[in-house]
Image (cartoon, rainbow, N blue to C red; front, side):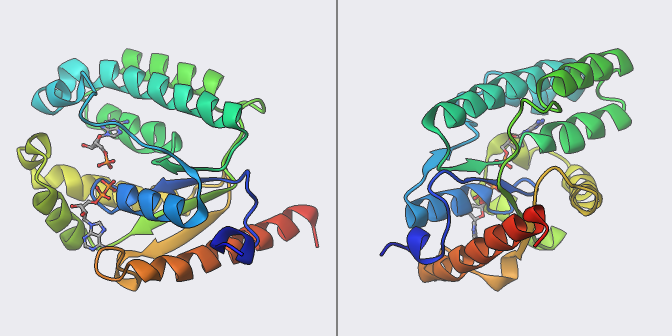
Length: 224
Ligand SMILES: Nc1ncnc2c1ncn2[C@@H]1O[C@H](COP(=O)(O)OP(=O)(O)O)[C@@H](O)[C@H]1O
Ligand SMILES: Nc1ncnc2c1ncn2[C@H]1C[C@H](O)[C@@H](COP(=O)(O)O)O1
């Protein structure tokens, strides 16, 4: 019996991994997908034609980048649907609007008109009964110090040149966002409670928690 069957995780489940930049989403996506024998949906960074430009000039490129991400994530959503689920998704579509677009609008690096156009498009595409929400969102959290340390260690040049206050602001926004998030069930994981790099077997405990959580959420939905 494989891990997925052992912990009763449906073969068509869709699990999305959320959390601030550098917290460990891609690492978790890979480990969980391997453990469950699921497909992955990664956020591609190297082939993104706007990301470098955006980090150089937020005001000029924030709208273009959000539209690009929305299109990419929607294409991925379609792919997941076509396969009939069984996916681990690196970052949720909800963070694009709830964190990034809103933060740039609030900070004045996205104009009110652009923000309105973007949110109208987002709501028309995503916030409808026709858009399937994930079965579970795994939210990874950690201290701002640890996360900034990981961003530095990973060393993407565009992120290195970005002021520390950007990551601090984002970290605070994530806490508020997740406390009010209700589009699907949420399992919270603290980065101090597991270590996929030095102890890859800790994924077993995470899979067990995912199984229990999906089962619980299922019973809650049925009112049992
Ligand atoms: N458990 C861990 N312990 C220490 N470093 C980690 C751990 N998980 C991920 N990292 C490191 O943190 C950095 C960011 O991880 P990554 O998975 O790329 O984050 P994200 O996808 O959330 O931006 C990478 O350098 C990665 O190797
Ligand atoms: N919607 C977004 N707006 C601005 N920047 C974004 C958005 N989604 C992702 N990003 C950036 C943040 C990071 O620099 C890279 C990749 O994110 P990561 O959390 O490391 O997977 O893209």
